[in-house]
Every structure is written in C-alpha cells, then in structure tokens.
Amino acid sequence: MDSVPQQLRFKAMAQSGQVWIDGKFVDKAEASISVFDHGLLYGDGVFEGIRAYSGRILKLRSHLQRLFESAHSIYLNIGYSIDEVEGIVRSAVTHNKIGDGYIRLIVTRGVGPLGVNPLQCPKASLIVITDSLAVYPAAHYEQGISLATASTLQKHPMSLNPRVKSLNYLPNMMAKLESIRAGADEAVLLNSLGFVTECVGENLFIVNRIDGKDVITTPPVEAVILLGVRRGIVMHMAPDLAYEVREANLTRHDLFAADEIFLTGTGAEIVPVNKYDGHDVSGGKPGSVTRKLMEAYRGMLKSAPED
Image (tube, rainbow, N blue to C red; front, top):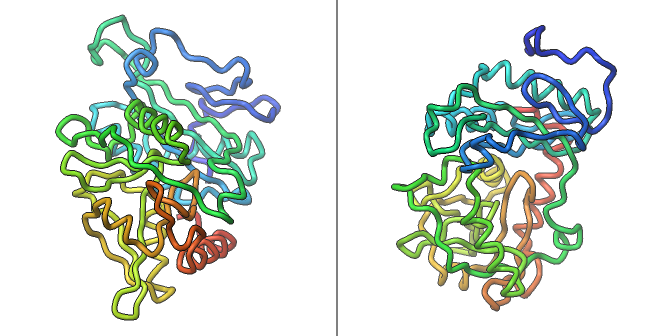
C-alpha cells in the first residue's frame, strides 16, 4: 500500500532513472545537494542499501528499522515516519520501473552554516536512489574472491559504533585501498582487540567440520559489527539445511584454519572466498556449504515475502 502523503506524490509522467530528493523526482544528471549540506561537509548522516527482486523489495521494513535506529543514535530527526519513508521508497521503485535493482536510501543532516554544530541544520534531507549494482563480477561467485587483512582497524564503539550505518565510510575506504594494493578483492577489518569484525561492506562467516557436522560461525555483535540484514537471513536459513550456526569471536588463525569462508551483504548477497592472506581456502574454490547456501538463497528469492 502506498503510504506516501498526498503532498509528496509525484504526479508528472514517470521517467526512468530519476532520483527522489526531498519530495520530488529529478533526473540523475540534475540530482544534487548543496555544498553546505552537512552530509557532504562532515559525513553527518545515515544510509541503507536495499535490494529489489522482480519488483519486490526484500526486507524493506528491516532496513528501515535499522535506518531509524541509526538516525536516532546520532540524534538525527529524519522528518518522516517509518511508514512515510516506506511509501516513498515504494514510490521510487514504481516510478523508475525497477524489477531487479538496488536502492540507496540516504538521510543527511541537511543544509547549515560552516562549523561542526548539527543543531544549526534546521531540516534533514532524504534521498532515494534506484539503480543497478554489481559488487563483484559474476565469475567471482563461481570461483570465489580473495581477502586480505587491513591494518586499518574497525571503528571503536566508544567513538562511533559500527552498528550505526553512517555516511562516514572513510575507514572502510582506507581498508579497501589496502586490499587493492595487496592484490586482493576485499579487506578484513579487525577490532582493537585483534578479533575479526567484518569486511568493507559485508559480514563474514567461516565453516568448519566439527564432530561430523558442518558448523557455521560468525563474529558476534560484541566484536563490533554491523548487524547485516543478509547476515540475519543466512543465520535463519542455515539450520533448515541442517547446519549449526554459532556466534563467536574469531581471530586470523580461525580464518586460516577454516574449511570455508563466505561473505554476506545486501550488495554482495552471498559470495564465496577462495583465498585469505595468501592462504588457499577450501582448496582455492567455493566450498560445498557455501554453494548450498547460495543455491538456497537464490531459491528463497523466488518466493520469499518482502519481510
């Protein structure tokens, strides 16, 4: 049901590839924000990445709840109710005739004078981008990707908790650059205690054969991670495939010793790992558990409810 308030509805003829910005659709080439927007000046804002499959928006409500939690954590008033934002996102998907696509939902602090004072920004800005996205080439899902440990650490929770999906992604960008320089596809970030947290934009899982059973382990929230929506899907789906799922602190040694490693994320979905810090994983190819999870995930997309 379209819950966008009447005054927010776009009544002109739909044009493909437009961006919703503060109540109206504009062409991509003309989509812009003020240079005085604190999202640009200071990375002051939050965002969500969301997927649509065959026109259905997967886990939209879960993403919106996380968006509002992130905004609340940084004292950011979005200016709309969660139902209104849901309606806006659905309107953008319909307007741009999105079947299979990616949705980037952004909330900035809004326009204000120079100076680090969020209270000087009278109104937040809401942006909805719909587009295609391919985090990794198709071949990587068949062959796997390589990981390298970054020297850049995960954000300390006493500074900015990684559960806040903020616009300040500089540590992630620095880690990504490190992995590229190391000749790897993706970076692994450690926390200040040396435990594995996550990758640049994905959660991380390992698989081990323990007492005749395939056990899947992922870092807990205490390790300082973003509670990924795809992470939750996999943790819910795995027991139905007779896999045990655990949350436990992981070290680099655990990754070296793992039988399999895979990543999950809205953009990446489920992607296998074939190498970690120069060590082959699963014989340098995707493991059987990872492949079964990928197959089950694709099957789920054909019939799963939106949330």
